[in-house]
Image: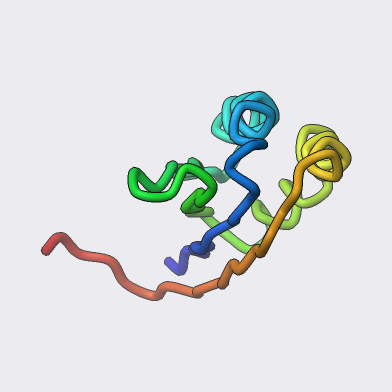
Length: 101
């Protein structure tokens, strides 16, 4: 079974931190309930309040495609326009095997 992993970071103006958290939380909560979502979260870099690490794991490309069409992701994209995003770099990985370290 292959899974899809998306990993990266979004860097915002630190002054927009509270506004960013307000839009990230509903996105994460709704996405974690989606069919095919194995993991989905944002973490704040403890050394840089404006840097969020993003990690997603999906059962399939189809599950991720359904997420891309979700109302909560569309709401996030609309809301993030009010935040000063300095950069966003996400990468997609197709994983054919997984084992513990």
